[in-house]
Amino acid sequence: MFSARFHWDFRPNRITQALAEKRRAGARILDLTESNPTRASLTYPPEILRAFDDRRLLAYDPVPAGAAEAREAVARYYAARGRTVGTASILLTAGTSEAYAWLFKLLADAGDHVLVPRPSYPLFEFLANMESIAVRSYPLAYHGGWAIDVDAFAAALSARTRAVVLVNPNNPTGSYVKRAELDAVSQLCAARGIALISDEVFSDYALGPDPERVATLMDAGPCLTFSMSGLSKAAGLPQMKLGWIVAGGPEALRREAMEKLEWIADTYLSVGTPVQCAAARLLAAGDSVQREIRERTAAHLALARETLAGSAANPLTVEGGWYLTVQVPRIRSEEDWVLDLLARENVLVQPGFFYDFDCEAFLIVSLLTAPEMFREGMARLRRFVDAP
Image 1 (tube, one colour):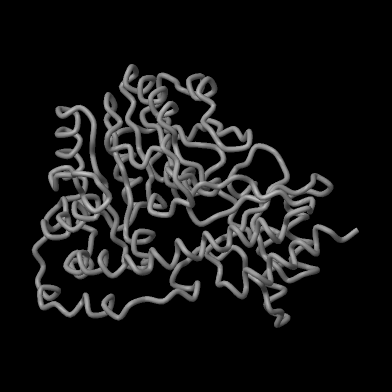
Image 2 (tube, rainbow, N blue to C red):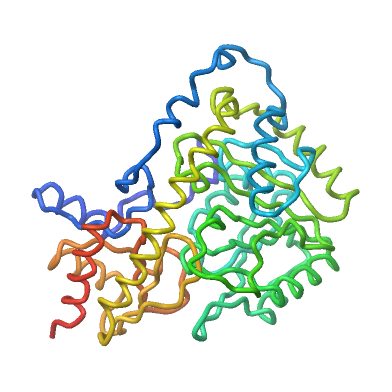
C-alpha cells in the first residue's frame, strides 16, 4: 500500500530506549547533544517578536522566488560579509531541508546519485531517498585536521553523479573547505557537468581565522553552484522556517537553473508570508544571538580542551560550527560508550556512527549546550574516561 521509500527500521535504537527509561525514572540528564538554539538558554532580543507587527501579514501575494523585500534582506546579509549578491540569484525556501529537496528535483532523475561527505549530517540519505535518488559518499580524512581526500573523491564520481554536497563548515567535524580542495573539486565537477551544493548554515560560526578557508562557494568559478543558508542558524531561529538558495557559476547555467527552480517553487509556494515580511528585522535582530552563540561555543571549546587535557579522551581539531568530536579509546564500542556514560553519569552524548564515521570510537557533543550543563557534563565525561 505504501511507497518503497519507507524502507527504514522505525524501531527506537538502544540509546533512545535507555534515555527514555532514565527520564521515566526521573533522572536529571545532562544533555550534551542539545543543538536547538531556542532550548539552549540563549538571550533573544524583543525585536524578534516586534518583527511580526506588520499588517502586510494579512495579505497573500505569492512570488515563486520569494518576496523582493525578503530577498533584498538576504542580499544585505551577504553584503555585510563582503559578498555582492543580486536578488535575481536568490530563491527563498521553507528551510534548507526543502532547499535540498528542490535542488535534488532540479538536478537528478530517479536512480541518479548525489555525492555527500563522510562523516556528515545523517539527513542526506533520507532527503535523497524521498526524491528517489541514491547517496554515495566521499571521505574526509583526519590528520591533525580534517580534509577532503581528493583522490577518493575523484574515484567516487560516476556517470550517474549529478551533484556534490559540500557542508562548509561540516557538521559535525567543524571543518571548512580549503581553497586547494575547492579548486580540485570544482575542476573535476565542471569537466563532468556536475553541480556543487554548498550547505553554509554554520558559516557565521568560525572558531578562528584561516586565510586558506573558503567562506562560501558563490565564487567557485567553472561549476554551477548553489549556496544555502537560513534563519535557523543565521539568527538562531529554526522555528521560523526561512532558508535560501544562492545560485552561482557560469551565467547561462545560473539563469537556466533559477528559471527551473522558480517553476519548482511555484508548484509548492511553501514560504510563509509572515516570515518573509519579517525577514529583514529577524536577520538584524539575529546579530546579537549570533554573537552570544560565537562567544559560548568558543568558551565551551576552550573548557572542553582544558577539562579533557591529559585524559584518554582527545578533542579533535574543530574550525567552526556548534559541535566537537571527541576521540575515545576503542576499549568498547561507540554505542557502549554512550550507553555506559548515560547509565553511570546521566550524561548524554552522540556516537560517531550517527554521523557515518567510518571507524570508532568517537563521541559528539554540542558546544551550544547551556553553560552550567556543559561544564558539569564535561567534568563527568572526564571522570568516566578516567575511571578504571
